[in-house]
Image (cartoon, rainbow, N blue to C red; front, top):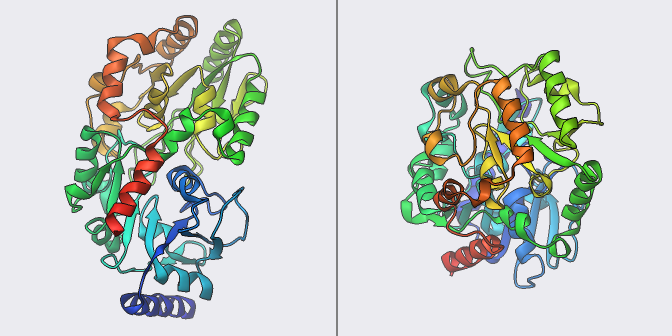
Length: 417
């Protein structure tokens, strides 16, 4: 209780100082991942890589518990500071620009104890807070969540307040911008930027132009793959805590034996990449079948970023995750396995679009059909040339280039100028 009062008092003091302290347009703040505090990744990292050698910008990386170099190379005017320190709190009130990948409430909160945190209620009108949301959603978020999910996950009131005051919220296409504006209500639509996702640059950049930390992750995936085809299975998180009848798919031994036979027949391996967030012990049990011969772990320990995994994939299987949209960015064959579609749509997060309209590949609901489809797709790689595939790409992307980060930086500069 004493610790809670003390931390809350510091957070309140920072709020008061932040109201009166002048902001420096040259100071741009970045945060480590809001859950994986030892990782500086995704859109924030891509934007950082775009500006890291610009001497006119002071780049501040706010960390939580550890001082690490995060694989950063060749950066100028760059500081790494712990958020919960005198230096960290000083720099955060000085930053004119703050990038978030989830929310101010999560990325820049002061955490203590096992699961407690104090929100830094930063002044949103005196600075440019740019939300670099980490994916192009197919599932619903925030204002569009189903009631049960919304009641549990949108309970921090400052999250609603901050959404109204973002300087920018990135999106990937005109249609995506409408969806983001609805989910991040009450944001103003003119503050939704159709910039493309910065981390998608990592999907298309030539190997020699990638940051060294990404090259190392890509090399690791290539080493596991060898001369075989790579099938990536990347299902999304289920709301098992918020919604009682939500379930992860549990594969049987017989099913996995069939899958192994298909992979061997096609000189392929399976890479399993589950969602990083785990708040209970109920998960997809496919992890127990990992043998590092035919079935491999391609989770966040192997590759912090998704780009190295998608780049090397020959077939991507997902469900409601934005992983399938990123695979679409570089013409990868896709299969959807939404085994719990009606329950997910009606009782969990919900979905934004009609699956049959926007998904460019086969949609299957049983493992028997899934295995049949995997076998077919490994033998017949023709999805990306179809009109349906190209239509889906136009739906989700205004740009398919390596300039997404550059556009975000330009839009940020324009806003603060």
